[in-house]
Length: 398
Ligand code: AMP
Image (tube, rainbow, N blue to C red):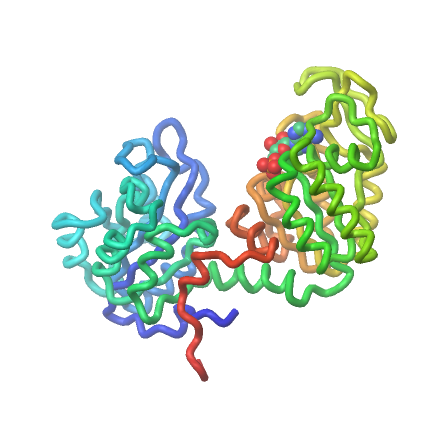
């Protein structure tokens, strides 16, 4: 990690514009339903407040599509943040203009102000130059700790950074990068990558890039059926991504060339329809016509667990089955359990995999649980993340 971090900044008395990812789920009463994302940003916020910064926090919430929508107001987040910080968190209903300026002018050292949702402004997602400049004019220094949006080029995480010489990252981004970059730069072998979920097109690039780094690639979930079909298997009515079929064939060819094995399910929990209340059976090999594969079977779990047990580095993104339904959750939970019991470096990314780990209360037993599903995948695809690229490099000797 050669980016400037908040530890490199002199923050005392400075107005600091801090971009975080407070895109939390809200319940029907507009209360924060899960505060994980707020807690993830706490180390950075507490460090800056303790250091005497005058903190101006920016975030997005949901997809209000460039206009104010009450349902996506960040006001309830200010209350939760105040509770966890045990201090008042001020809230500005406007990002720019006199209301915002007055709120900022009132900030004393160690005070914290949360601004309204940046996505209430259409300029945000357009990465508008003038809007970025105006945001930058609010503060002396800029810090980005929103890893979850690092793969997007928006005004509050990319455009604005260009107007500061020392745009730095916070502790969350620093920590995410240290684990994720290690996976592609110097993973301890054997390195096992487990990729699941439904959409082949979202994950095929990461499979391709990890072929060069990982020793074993384990494919489960709905995407496995496109791989199995490409190998000539009968997959019945299982979910298929026909558009990605050629890419899958190419990926097999590249794996063979590199001497890598792509491990696929050898048995399946199947049902006649996509529902929790239908009879299920477990079959080896081919899936009969009229049935769909909805979870990996016990032999596959055993195969995958053997590889996991031998690995020194494990990365996992995407469920092994329709884990939202009781009948098809065994595969996903077994993978989560296997990783949690392993002494390897274990990294979990992606909303569903993280949710599964939380469901079995094993998040603390992973080396790293990523807060950015899309961002972590793009990084592992070998792409540069615009939100990270926009930050300043460490100076010589810093
Ligand atoms: P993705 O967004 O591509 O990571 O896909 C996640 C979704 O894949 C979850 O909602 C799972 O229910 C779904 N999924 C996992 N396995 C299967 C399967 N065998 N058939 C259909 N959907 C699946």
